[in-house]
Amino acid sequence: MVKEFSDYWALILGGSTGLGLAAAHKLAAHGMNICIVHRNTRVEWPGIEQSFAAIKATGVQLLHFNADVLNPEKRNDILLQLQAAMGANGRIRCLLHSIARGNLKAMPALSGDDFQLTMAHMATSLYEWTAEILQHQLFAPDARVLSFTSDGSYKAIPHYAAVSAAKAALEAITRSIALEFAPQGVRGNCIRAGVTDTASLQRIPGGSELLQHSKARNPFQRVTTPEDVANVVYLLCKDEAAWINGAIIPVDGGTHIH
Image (cartoon, rainbow, N blue to C red):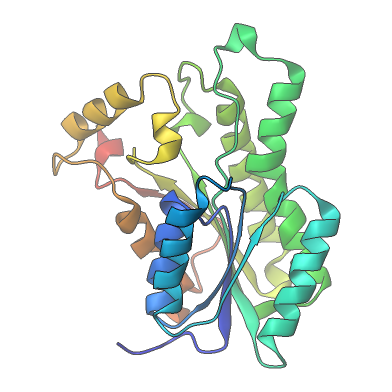
């Protein structure tokens, strides 16, 4: 396989499982170096370590940090370490936001803090990382800021109010990144993934029913896989995708059309 992303890096926020991890595997297979910021317990580490070893086996560089993405000191330290690892020629081609830390409560049980914590992790952290990467001048001249949204950004789903608000905000932030950071060579796009059987979905009350409903509506009679979504992340990182900017792209096999 041609290694088309030499000297490029992907910085993935929330890349130890699910969509973020699938994207890491896909990009690494095409030669992109990977830096993953994740938040996991010791119990989860053996499985994660195995996944990270598979990424390293592709021959790319891999950095990983078990850290709170909201901590500004940690963010600065991670970017300094990444800068050192990249050397003079390396640059961040892709910042991928794949954080799925939010409160899944019935709306009457939500507090203001529940909303704020969810918004901070799943929306405004995208801006904070984008802005600081620009301050450190670590983006490639043709950089991609990508994030994962969902139908909840415009639909009411039980127990999803805080995440729904965060996804709507994430899309708005992405549009503004696409507009206001374009002079710095940054493109911003959201991928609206179809219902995918991940750990995040399993935490949603009624997640199994969502899977079955999505499968029944899908023209191909199956649900979206993490690999389906990772393929689109890869496509959006290619040179040929440079003119895609400010888009919300459905990746669900056509489930959204009916």
